[in-house]
Amino acid sequence: MTDIDPGIRFPGESEEYRRERNRLLQAEAGLRRAIEQVAAQRRALPPGGVVPDDYRFEEVSDGGEVRFSELFETGKDTLVIYNFMFPRYSGDTRPGPPEGETAKLPLAETPCASCTSILDSLDGAAPHLSRVLNLAVVAKSDPDRIRSFARERGWCHLRLLSSRDNAYNRHYHAETPEGEQMPIFNVFARDGNQCQYCGRHFPTSELSLDHVVPRSRGGEHIWENVVAACRPCNTKKEDRLLHEVGLVLRKKPTAPKELTWIIVAVGTVHPHWEPYLEHGAALSA
Image 1 (cartoon, rainbow, N blue to C red):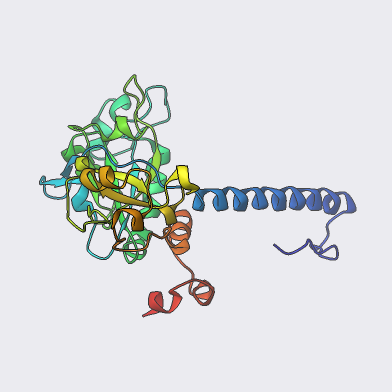
Image 2: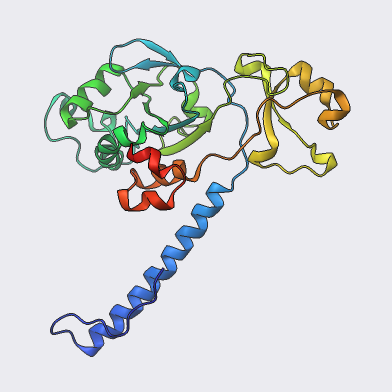
């Protein structure tokens, strides 16, 4: 971040205005540095736990069923899910939609206005996001209601899903114990449901996380040291190194690309940024 230029002025401003304006700019610069530090911490997070269920969602577009594992397209191993508060928080008394079928619902059953604003923007960014990751929007509501509201808002690019019949919202803190819906982004990474030792594919329930270099042997809980392993391989390996038990790592684990986090945060990648980002040339193709 560049320093504040002490010589900058707007026409007709007073010394008092300039003094207070510079104080504001300094505060904004400090806030930006704090945001950048938090973003760096987010990118450095170790992997979370294995998804406990292959949740079944209802596709809003056609009423069909799709499993959680099917939300990952070939070649894209990152899935971003936004929880849309539809219905809104029970204490939210802001006006509901002014017109359309959704406006006929009781206020408590209408969607959150803040979530709606976010999705208005995300719908435009979705085609750019889909080039590098999988994106879905989940709401615990009737698919017909979600479809009707999406049509009223003019959303064309979002993959909308209903979670009314599964426990996804509750498991991933998009729902309180009292049933209130919460807005939250969750990011998931996959390894193809493949044991990274024997290479066989398993249901999610039969895989667990394993540290390539065991924690008891000095291994860290970081992306580059964690893989999915089946129960037999996990049992065979225990707290030993691969060469000690005759196992071979199929693919070296890596952290998600920084580009993924940038796009999740800002919605798109400006062409001027691409030379400074990994795989920037591929994005321009």
